[in-house]
Length: 150
Image (cartoon, helix red, strand yellow):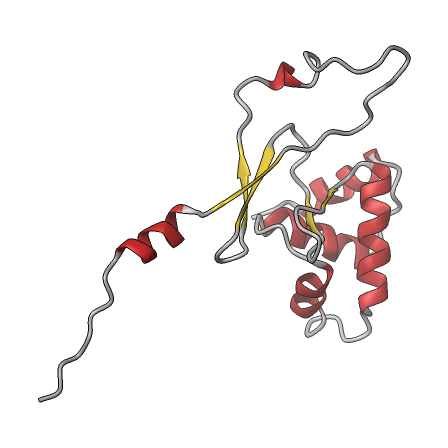
């Protein structure tokens, strides 16, 4: 269970004034590690908050990413999703089921070891991997049982 005060403190630490909507969106991000989209967050929160609009969710997530409280992921050209996990990590997109998974980076100094042209500064980096997740691979390997007519 997420402590409500921790969410307030997190938003405040990122220069974001907590509101009922902002708290709800951040709580959803923190408790759902599925890298949800604007639509997913809106669909989940709207029944409990009928006055919440999709525009409010979008603007809230935009504010979170601008202030560094969340990350916006654009792993593929069709979907934009969001992540409240801020430590350095990569993301894996399963091309079969569409789920996005967090992937640990064993060498976090990878960015520091990257040679950028003189005078350039890296403000953000992202490592995206695409393939097939283990669940989809297992499902593909498992023969489907065919019923024989009796």
